[in-house]
Image (cartoon, rainbow, N blue to C red; front, side):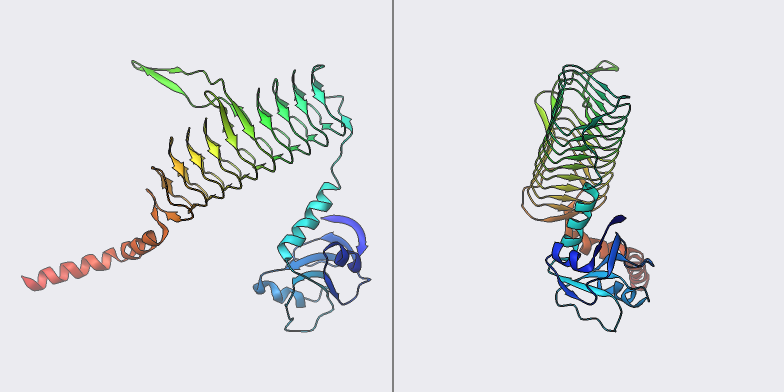
Length: 342
């Protein structure tokens, strides 16, 4: 990632770091430590990558306070308290510096009734429908559809191809990545004889502040009331959130997971990839559910780890799996004992 050229000393000031080496070294990009490069800023957090410090490329590298190199090198080192945190702050700073505001593209369609604040961008072929409200410093990229009466807060980024359907409410500092769909109909049907009749879905979706939603994720509108994504939630790509679901604040859900209608995920919970949550159940706060697990009933204990299908406690699963792997040998031993006793 190219950045405006600056010195290693400038980077040390930005990160509140302690510089060791050439402070005048030029930095013009952010890069991975394992890739060959010069004049880049990299970071070292995992000890197994230390060998790349001595690859012969002279760079500026963020390292953890207390780190001691095992060899000499020509690199400039900047010692910081939190390598991941400081490098993330730099990524955030430089990526935002490239954002463009102050324009509504002539190839977009913005209804006259829409209320758009200052410093808002609307990209090519995007549609902003009637009654929409958009807060300051929000960026609507190309080919985005915003339905009627949608409310969008400040400093929101909506990436290409996103659909935000009618009456949805989006808070401040939200990022919605390409091809996500917010506010589509919930999966509600009632059986009548051999047929299913659609139940009208007349609620909405509410996304609170500081939420990030991955590409291809769908969040269904409520049948009545609201589907709610609380403050600080992070959703990965390709996730299905059913109608009337509530995701508690600061919960994290990995890709290809699904949460069925009217379930509630407690705050601070972490769901691995391909986790399935049944409908009308509650997951206690700070639960950790391992990848590919299936949860069919409510979890009432806070802060526990769970695994398997259906889920059991994480430690119980590992013990059970250790036995399961040995079943062929165990069966053979039983068979041998039976033969010996005959």
